[in-house]
Image 1 (tube, helix red, strand yellow):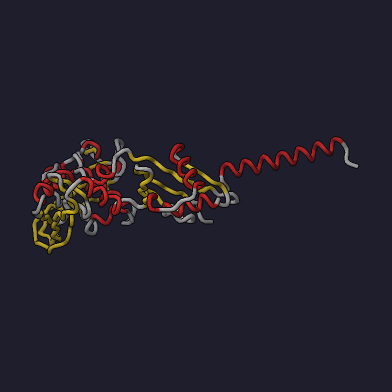
Image 2 (image 1 turned 180 degrees about the horizontal axis):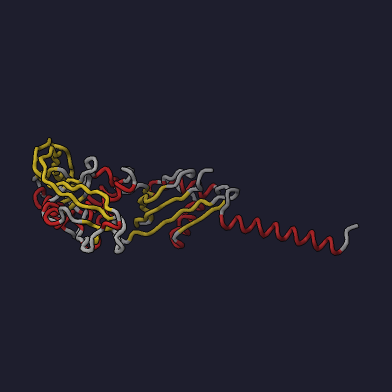
Length: 308
């Protein structure tokens, strides 16, 4: 016969086990993984969202604006060692809409300043060393790229922008920058306390540079036609063309209103259908898919549990 005291002990154990089970379900452990869908409304209409606007700065913005002035409506613009405009930008000119097309048209032997750096021990850093944050973008960017390349042993994503251990100053504002004209032989530090110091070497060298040419191809002669172009080319999932169940659409509406929707453990059939309609694989995380739904654009991201 079980005593009152034993009954209370059994009951307490059961409650603790139940609470433990609820807790692990809330945080999403290995036994109950979380699948999370984020959906954020894009306030722009499709046309405004798709149109390219050059950046404000001189480093990237000046070449982009010069290229647009030259190619619209039917010209071309050529650069060496860099692309003034990326391929596939949509732009507008006099009520007509164009897509930029960038391609390689050859190469040329040209003289350009190049930058290399060498490490400086902290105790050898001079008092007049230049702090990286005091430099403008055309001067600071090459040094940050070279620094990242050095400390990662060449595994930095930015290493692709280098020729070996050398940065070529191909853009116009780089060639006229303080780095190109004043900092040869100077020591530059990444922090106020002199950490990660590097001595700068600037030389002018004759180089073979790839020639890039950009043109504009007309894709629409009105805003209405261009809107259809955007929905066909920029949007990843047009839910007006997808047959979703009422339950799946309810989940999407919930994700939009709350910013996110989460399921723990095995996915419901409605959530699986929604993910399929949005183009997500339930086993893989993916971000930044553009969705057209109910006359508005959204940016959707899905986060699947990490694989064991």
